[in-house]
Structures are given as C-alpha cells and as structure tokens.
Image 1 (tube, rainbow, N blue to C red):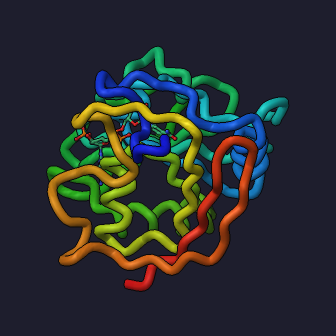
Image 2: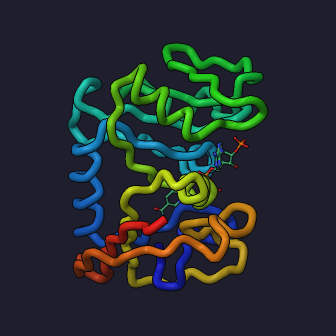
Image 3: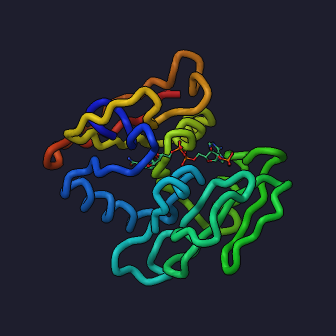
Length: 200
Ligand SMILES: NC(=O)c1ccc[n+]([C@@H]2O[C@H](COP(=O)([O-])OP(=O)(O)OC[C@H]3O[C@@H](n4cnc5c(N)ncnc54)[C@H](OP(=O)(O)O)[C@@H]3O)[C@@H](O)[C@H]2O)c1
C-alpha cells in the first residue's frame, strides 16, 4: 500500500507502489506458496497474470479467483495456459471457463472457510497468498483465516476517499477490529515491509 494506506487510485487503476526490492520479494514469495488468490475485482481492475517469471505450468502456484457470479471475463490473463487456475463461485452460478476448474461453494455467496477446506482436500493446497484486493482481504480477516499479514508501505501518497485500502468491505472486520502483533520490519528500498501476526 501507499504511505497513505491506499492500494490503487480512486478510479481503481493500478499504480506502482512497490520498490524494485519489494517486487523481487513478491516474486520470490510466490515461489514458496501452493496458491495465489485474488478477488474478481482485482481481475477486472488489473487483469493480472499471477505467475512466476520463467516458471513452467507445473512450477507456478495454482491461481484462485473468488468470483461469486462468474464475472471473470473469458479473456482474463488469469485464465491463460501458463498455470492452473481454479475459479470459486457460489452454488447457483452456472458459468464455466474452458480449461479452467470451477468450484461451487456456498449458497448465494462463497463460503470462504469451506472453500479453503476444498482447496486443501481436493487440490492439496496447504498455503495460500491472498494478494488482494481490499474486499477479499477484509473477508479473510472477518473469517479469521489470516495467519500472517505482510504489507509493504511504499514512498507514495495517492489520496482519494474512495481509493481501495488493504481491508475494505462493509464495516468492521470484527467488533473493535483485529489486533495484530508486529513480528518484523524491514526497509526494502524506498519503503518498509511490515509483518504482523493476528491475535484473534
Ligand atoms: N496494491 C496492491 O498490492 C493491490 C493488490 C490487489 C488489488 N489491488 C487493487 O485493489 C482493487 C480491487 O480491489 P477490490 O476490493 O475492488 O476487489 P477484490 O477484493 O479483488 O474483489 C472483490 C470482489 O470479489 C468477489 N468476492 C467473492 N467472494 C468474496 C468474499 N468472500 N469476500 C470478498 N469478495 C468476494 C466480490 O464480487 P462478486 O460479488 O461479484 O463475487 C467482490 O466484489 C483494484 O483497484 C486493484 O488495483 C491492489
């Protein structure tokens, strides 16, 4: 996030916040995880690939999209053949994407705890990086599914009261918020990486 706590501009357009050192960190981090997860809001706003540079199909983490009603465009980069992709929708959704696995989970909305169980049981996924956006990160906090929260604070002020932040959504993620214990801080170029462990 930027130094004023934003993930992007008010019009939700992607803007570079990371230093070169932080970009290298994120690339290396992705290699260590079984899966990378984003919400459909990020797919529509940023159209990310969510792959590791020079990695083969099997070396890449599994890409996971939370998309209740199947709004992911057929042309989205996250659906390409560079890595496996799983799109999670609600049970009523009938949308399918060629060559992509769909998981239907929850009535009218995605049952996030159950979705994590299915990813473990059916896909062998033991750890997931949730890369955003703010709506999805807030849901993971609300469901007490965050084990570790790392945020790079970059040297940039964005502004805009409607610009997305790392935990958006409707109201509190928990009554009074979720307390975090700071376990590490590291300067990475023109910014700082903060690591917190939630105390639910
Ligand atoms: N700086 C960064 O590192 C970074 C990283 C990622 C994103 N971003 C920015 O963040 C913005 C996108 O964030 P966003 O908050 O709009 O979108 P998001 O969190 O990526 O996606 C939110 C959408 O996901 C769907 N969803 C399905 N299940 C959900 C659940 N359990 N909890 C929450 N959402 C669920 C909902 O749409 P449906 O109801 O249609 O399913 C919801 O509107 C963009 O501006 C992007 O550039 C920045």
